[in-house]
Image 1 (cartoon, one colour):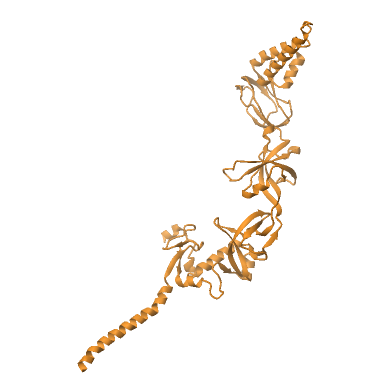
Image 2 (image 1 turned 90 degrees about the horizontal axis):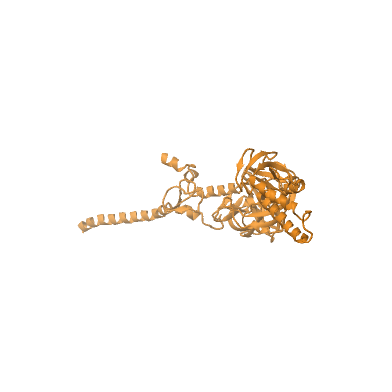
Length: 435
């Protein structure tokens, strides 16, 4: 009996040790589970998760581990703070210039302000060339930018083809309706034929490039001119000049470009839905950034093409230009009054736009702010319409929104460990490799 008892004692000891070890392991399991890493998180953009350590694709910072116990703390418990909340006391708000504003109803009356560029009215731009070859004898007062008047002489050229056509024109005039050698019985027929011949030769001279002023001079002086004058067809400014004394030119060579700038176009650059306000016939106000003056303009058209560089639409406005204050390629401010449906609005600086969503920070209690996603509508005079996500009377961060967002991300990251572990330093991938 004693011998059996001696054999049983070691067996009992082994069983007791096994039960004790199992109990200890059972007690350690909660701690192990709590320290288990659920995923790795971008410290600057917590929405990005990864199942393994590494660097954030957007900023190059080390991903922060999120443990099970920290994830549980971030869940709401008995009315505790929700994820995305941030706490900033009044002293810190004042120190960093964080300002608040109320969500208010807006009437939708305002002004859209965009940039515009002055361009010549294309219907008032004149190109000067000749329908024949020639030689330039001289030029005068024809520098680019000079103001010229109608029929002002700019250059003198020589072209043999003008001589023969001018001779035929002068001969047709000599035998025209007023000629004394015309038989009386054929007077009517001769008058008709003579007038047609004179007109045909005058049109030929115009097609070659002779001005009406010189054609009238040939009729008056009854002499064939040796030279042909290049004259301005209108009052305006010389935009381009491709002529010089001693130059030989071929037919259809552009010599001058002259624009009448008493009436100009303004091409505005407008994004998105704002172009709806630029309806043909709508009035706008043009102001010069460096001058205290304004003038009226009227929308004539919206060009169908989108600018490839700026991705904007370009409404065209027309304006009278007394005193030639508006010059080609000058930048101006375009102010268009608009009237849109009323709605709730917040300051434009209150909106954080990530490209995928738009958020604001709403004050839930003094010093406590909550990130909330919103849907926006029109924007007028630095006010943005809120279609969904806020109520009238809510208080939002209107200045320093980026600082509040950064503090929110830091506080979220600090819940995953000490601040030093969450954001060790703003190291680049190059720094990490070097270490």
